[in-house]
Length: 123
Image (cartoon, rainbow, N blue to C red; front, side, top):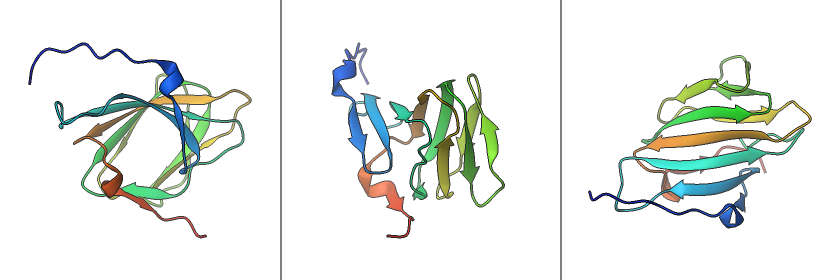
């Protein structure tokens, strides 16, 4: 690995069919051990139930409020400063229960790849 400074532009944010907006800040073959993305869930919305095979994911809540469900456990309330650690292959979903966007960083080890993503929602 070599020293890099990655320049990102918020205009690169895109809608992911999971039910949230994603701004990929770092996800490159040059740094395969970690990916970083900012996720944004609109008020009243819930992401699809899904899991990541072979990937540990961490949510770092930046703003907004919601609840997260992991591995069939009861929903847990989350807000700014909370860190949610999601083991590989654990089912997961997050719901925005507030009136503003729920914004969090998603840090994945190893890096997120679409092939690791499994949509578990019905329909």
